[in-house]
Image (cartoon, rainbow, N blue to C red; front, side, top):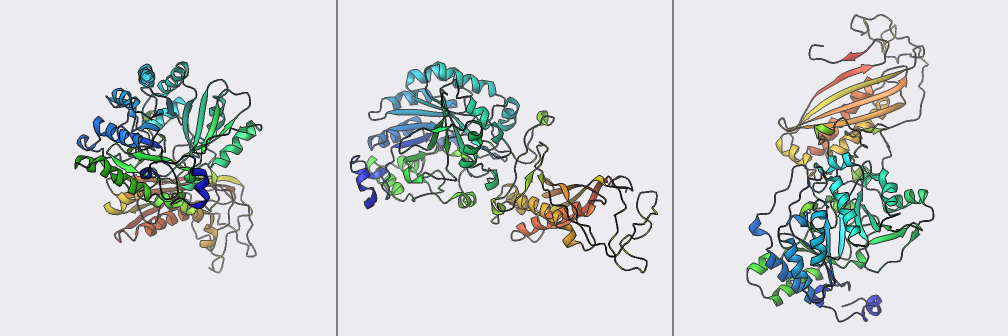
Length: 579
């Protein structure tokens, strides 16, 4: 049944195969087929840090099975097929497959999404065999950053492939760029500039959640934010009319040869006009990229199902397709395949703590966000320093303190820079806040740490970001920052300090199944920030315990200590095992 509001729209295009039409009247005439799970890059978004288990070759679709399914879908009304991966161009028989697809009557468009590494070498054959459209994945224009993200060299190969495609007459050449805060949102203008003299269609894609990519809301740069940024440079940016089924909102800078677009899967979904189905390399049908339900067409094929039976199986799956996906926050909590195992549109990248290759440790990149969607209402500032490890920074308004009970800091000190008497007591031995009014204002820093021994089960769940409560590491980091800012409220005699900088970094110790948390605080003030650093470390460890306690009660918090402090009148301190 077609809803009444859609009858007029659809009557001119009927008849269309009932097997490829869902209960909301959407006609699925676009099929994406993954040729392989393998890839010649190791992009940190697409490939989870722990890697993926590839499907045994015997369980992947053969060329004959792939073509049989393609013929079936085309016969029912599919007129566009996109070949994806993994990386489709590393499949040895990719050209013969394309040649056979080209023979299918009714198939108007054959497209390929590629990382571009093999593109220059294969382009003449691809063009001759009948590839109509090219999508090339490229998330940065900085060669060294490309190498860091992809764990492989190859930036210049990709750029050469783009130039070759233009030279061979592909117009437009689509460039897919997934935009992630803290990684490449500063390159928006550079990407748009590419469209000035080249027939490129640069498509900025909102960062989407898949298994293993540690998606979070704060890392996603929305369509509207990207558009506002670009309009600051080109206020005359104008929309380009598109087709009803287009996934991208298209724009053009007047006078530019190419155009740009935004794929807004997260902030403004286009589910209502979705016409796409996907077949994975192992033969599973996915009716929604973000859905976790799949139907194995391979198994039915190999069990001897007839074409008619396959059509009923396909029709049942399409008929169950939901009106729209679950929304960005729900999707991030759902079990789904890693992107490399889905026939998807893009190859994108995300960095995880401690993953930088040694040869790039001396180079500078924007900080990598490591935050939780569950805590998206908190406001905080990025660190002004571009570092691999994520540093959360906060600046709080300067606030005073009540010094009705004057007390002078003890002047006597021992050789190691500590005082010979307690400083938070008055002459009568009662608790009293230290009067620091006479001290010089200096830049003071402190670092503290703590260790949480999780045990193997909790450790593996935390590392894979599979805890039911969410991203434990991100929540612990943010809790540590909030703890540092609230130190004077938690520790009665601590002075309220305007923190110039507060950061929490986390290291995973595989062999010990433990997490090391380090907190650093800095202020321009008259007293030190040791307590802020210690509070941050303690709160972060306690938060990690709370996130994991439903999994194991065998968790140990240990070794909370001050590692260093600088800037105080008693000199510097650096912890050592002998101190």
